[in-house]
Amino acid sequence: KNEVEQSPQNLTAQEGEFITINCSYSVGISALHWLQQHPGGGIVSLFMLSSGKKKHGRLIATINIQEKHSSLHITASHPRDSAVYICAVRSAGFQKLVFGTGTRLLVSP
Amino acid sequence: EPEVTQTPSHQVTQMGQEVILRCVPISNHLYFYWYRQILGQKVEFLVSFYNNEISEKSEIFDDQFSVERPDGSNFTLKIRSTKLEDSAMYFCASRLDREYEQYFGPGTRLTVT
Image (cartoon, rainbow over all chains, first blue to last red; front, side, top):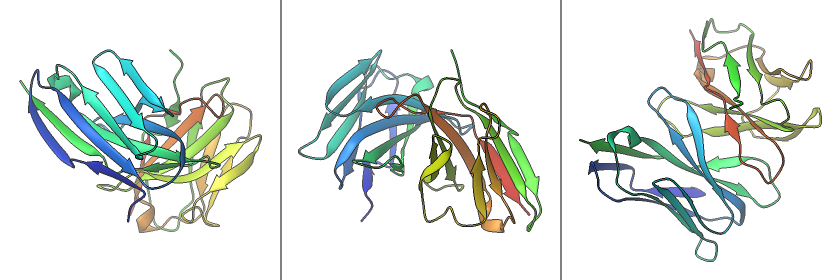
């Protein structure tokens, strides 16, 4: 079983729709990261969470430590949000990030 | 805004050759990382580096790999004798301190022929 599971693997949406991407993990963590990877390959850090909820613009990330689950929400989605969204966790006591396989999002106009 | 830079953006090399991938982390950051992503697969951790030494490494990071911070600004990944399966995108990342987020470079695409 993978340490980090994301769903869905692929997601298509119409511009303006509310989007949710889910991440479940199996280990105790010190932090969870949401990352965005564009078609060119570059990775951008969106959020780092250890508890609760964070918001940045149209993006919201939540984490439930007891349930080992996190969600990334995009409100009023836009074609420029099209990218791969990756969940990654840092286990307690370790430096390394363990990555999920990513969710490929395509937002159509 | 400060950013992590990597050179070259694309490197083509023949199997068995040595390659050095270069990264310039954000200047006041203390933790440095290399990751790789084979085409179509997820990102994998290779190594972390702190206080001029390796703090953690993965099973992938065998004796063929080494890292160095030669001059206080560059952070390099060397692959001594490249194999076809080393073809991947290699990302460098840096972090200010343990509880801060990581900043990723744009990546170097390594193609081994």
